[in-house]
Image (cartoon, rainbow, N blue to C red; front, top):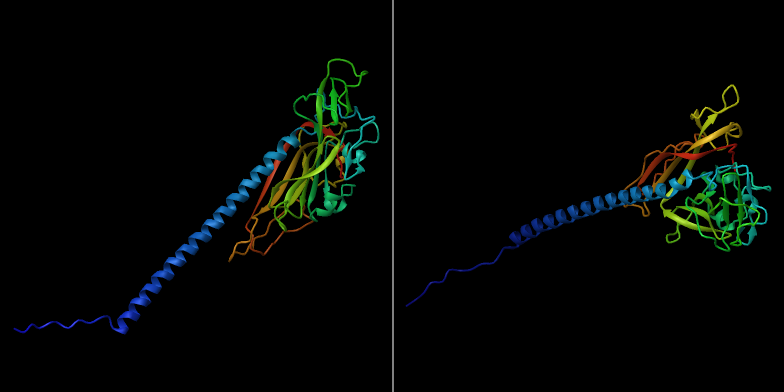
Length: 322
């Protein structure tokens, strides 16, 4: 008995090549979709991080600015006695700068601002790392809440009539009753060239009081520019303010010595920490300072700009440039 077996064949070379080509297109399509999804995720994540940094920066700065000119139980900026106290930064005495004092403290300049290039002081940490064409903002006030006596910390003893500073933990015996104790707050907000953890990433930084020392600390990375304007109430024909903001001016404006600062307007430009492959920021960003012109980065970082106006609760006069 004979059996007939059907012949069996594999795939021909042409069929194999066609199958491989189809598979290659499918793989390339999947890789393309993956890369596009990854790029979209990175872009979304970058913008979300910038937005988060932006909110954090303003959340930290706003209460500080609102308290400018608060001196405890009064806001009598003409009568803050600083006799016998001093402030140190990098081993240098910076009392006249940190306290705005010639003796006693004429604390009119509760909020100051100016261009980085015009700023000089004896804090080398600050002076070496600031980005050019950015503004510096200085804020002075007492802490929002009363504090316990603390030797080594610069504090303010305040009643309804006057305030006095001391740093030995002992209220001056001659001050009298009806007082409260507050810490002295002095913050200098500026844009640094580097982040503490990331080189070549700009950051919002501040010099702040730690006891009797001025120290430098990072607030948030990714902030590359900050500009300041003051909302001012100019004097009326009778020589008195009317309690209304008449206009916003740059910190160097000649009108400031004869105006009341009622608000601080902040403009910030923030960017992602890392450049995005395949992306080019071709946008133009317009800062508050018209003398700077538009900023056109033309690089791979995504950016956002924000402007916020913060009202000062304790209006102060004669606020001028640094």
